[in-house]
Image (tube, rainbow, N blue to C red; front, side, top):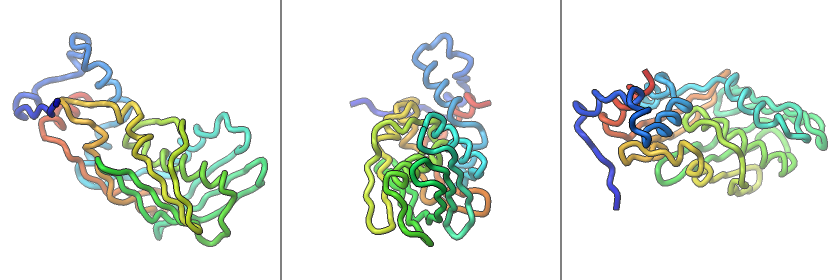
Length: 224
């Protein structure tokens, strides 16, 4: 069984992977995925325990998700604090849809990736629209951590009353980032998110980064 390689930090921190990408073919796709997904601020935020994602970035991601959608012409989210977000959408079959959701759970680690929303202050909307929204919005929230993803296969979810629970584990594992390893460490497994807390105009993610210092230093070299 392949085991992660934990080389001394003093060795790996001196390796500039971006400089040797043309000589070491195996590192080239790894470097590309890391550069396409993270920047220095994201890496620092993960390590320090807090990553902030603005509504502007979330709405840009949502806009891309409906570019070829004939049923939804506009989809926007506003974070309003108290763990809640407001959703506004223009749809062909339902007309104007407005609802408020509470993020009850947003958890990602190497064992599971679970998101739970509860619709408040409104009767549960059409399940087709709700399923699309919670799936796409969950991926939009994760985009800052694992990069852009296509919805692709239907995400497993459970709807009980006004509460929707999603299992993102497989869709994240199947992404380019989810398949990427560095020195035997799967990058998707090094990220932990304990909570996503909407504030006014942004969502604050409580995080941790579980990787050896040597691996983190190599990623810093890639992102410099």
